[in-house]
Image (cartoon, rainbow, N blue to C red):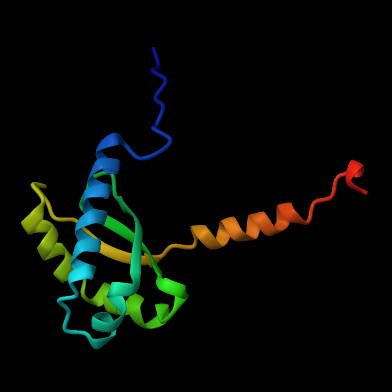
Length: 130
């Protein structure tokens, strides 16, 4: 007899909970601004962490960021990735997780995608709108 195995379509409750905890810790570290890299000292306080997605095994996590006004992303993003150890150290201090996930930073493009979709939908005309 063959079992129907269905994989969950999205992240587990645990992943969501851990992701939110990681987001709060990362945002707090950015707000405090204890960095050696001058690009981060100036830019990190103007960055919003929109979401953190941990992997199913919770050993890695991707933090999605948006800089205020979209400024200096080509400087801030590599600097954040180079400083990932600072965030991991703080996560280790503040969380009760067995493993500290490796953090990777990426630009959050979801808002750009929503804007593009709204522009496309705004151009649609209906036959009764003529």
